[in-house]
Length: 358
Ligand SMILES: NC(=O)c1ccc[n+]([C@@H]2O[C@H](COP(=O)([O-])OP(=O)(O)OC[C@H]3O[C@@H](n4cnc5c(N)ncnc54)[C@H](O)[C@@H]3O)[C@@H](O)[C@H]2O)c1
Image 1 (cartoon, rainbow, N blue to C red):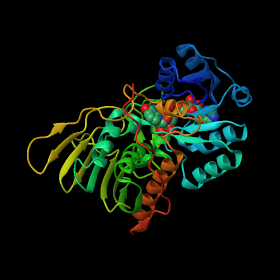
Image 2 (image 1 turned 90 degrees about the horizontal axis):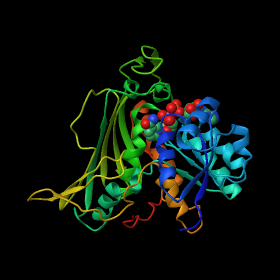
Image 3 (image 1 turned 135 degrees about the horizontal axis):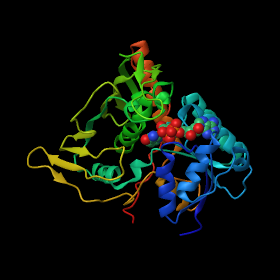
Image 4 (image 1 turned 45 degrees about the horizontal axis):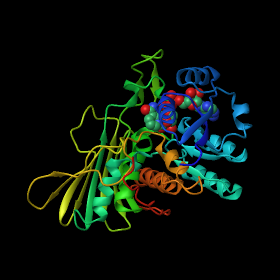
C-alpha cells in the first residue's frame, strides 16, 4: 500500500460519521480537515472523530488535501464540487452526483479541463454483495439475463432524519435519493440503460418531521414520492423499478435478476454485503459464497479504491456511471411528466470487477 489518500471533508451532517468511522479504521485514507457551512457541526464532527475542523476558506486553501469528499446535500453538490476543482482538488460526491445532469456535466467538464478526477457514491456496489452477484451473472449463473425488478418502498425519511427538507426538494424524492443504489447496481449487473418509461405520483403536499428539534414541523413536497419505471438496457434486458416514500412496509426483494436459465436474488444495494441466492428452473435456492468485492467495506470505500489505484485518481465508484444513473433518473421523471418513452442519451463503461479483497 502507498501513502494514504489525503482527504478534506465538506459537509458534517448525518452521514459524515459513517465516512469518518471508515477513514478512522482503514490505512488507505487520512482526513486532513473537516468543514461545514455551519462551523459548529464541523467542530462536533472533529471532536467525535479526532480530526481537525477548519473553516471552508482554510480547507479550500489547504495544499495537504488531495481529494475533497463532498457530503453536503444534493442541491449543493455542484457548487462544492466546482469549488473543489477550482482549488485544485479532485472531488468525490455523495449521491446523487449533482441535482441535475446539466450540473453534473459541468462538473465533469471542469474536472477534465483541470486535469482532475471526480468520483461519486454509491460505493455500496463495490462490496461483496453486488460484486459477487455481478461476477455470477457474468459467469452465466442465470444464463442470458432477461429482466430485473428493483423495489425500494418505505414510509419516508422524515420519520428518522432530523432535517429531511432535502429529501422532498429537487434532487431528492425516493428516485433521486435511493434510486442511485438500485440503478447503479442494475447498471453493474446488466449494463447501461437506453430508454425509460414511467409513472410518478406525489400523493401528499407536505410531510411531518418526526424526530429531532424540529419534530412536528411540516416540510413541503416538491418532488414525486412514488415512482414506477421501466428501463430498457442496451443489452436487451428490461428492469422494473419501484421507488416509493409512500409505502409503510414491503417484503419485496430489493433486486431480482432473471435469466433464461435461472433467477437471482441480489442483496440490498444500500448495503455492502449480504449473500446473493441463485435458483435454476428447478431445485432449491443456493446462497453464493463471496466471489468478488471488498470484504468489510463501508461508505468511503470508493475512495479506498481510488487510493489503491495506480494513479490515485481512477476509482470504480465512477462519476461516468453516476452521471449515467442521474441521466436515467431525470429521464424517468421526464417520461412520467410527458407520458412517453424517453431515450437516455448518456451511456457508461461499467468499471472492472473488484477481486475478492480483504
Ligand atoms: N443521511 C443518510 O443516511 C445518508 C445516507 C447515504 C447518503 N446520504 C447522502 O449524503 C448527503 C448528505 O446527507 P446528510 O443526511 O448527511 O445531510 P445533512 O443535512 O445531515 O448534512 C449536510 C451538511 O452539509 C452542510 N452543507 C450544506 N451545504 C453546504 C455548503 N455549500 N458548503 C458546506 N457545507 C454545506 C450542512 O450544513 C450540513 O451540515 C446527501 O447527498 C445524501 O443523499 C445520506
